[in-house]
Image (cartoon, rainbow, N blue to C red; front, side):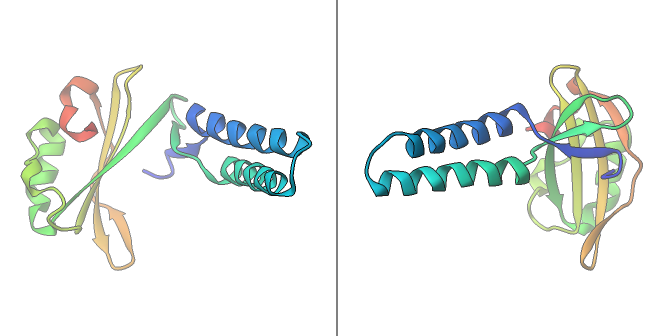
Length: 148
């Protein structure tokens, strides 16, 4: 699933970086005391670092749409029930079992603009999560529990 969805900058990431950088430049340019200049350099540097590091949105390589991501964790003993729910009706997943273990991970990529939801189940194999289901595509109305 990670090959299909690439990390990109969201509008919020760019705005935050630009505001920090601009505030830092203003503090540097304004003739004031040395501590204000130090704060300015720090803010400008933080803005630049965040611009290059922070990528919170995802882009679907097949459709080109921008998506958000949520992750839910379930115990490994619930593998069959979670897989069955994902393949038929994702809203039927028992959310009472969420965060009671981390043997399974459900990645949900969604767009509220287009109403598309993409879901995949991963199983924890030591040191990383391996996909154990195909990518399921749903309408956003069928997967409300997974995007909250």
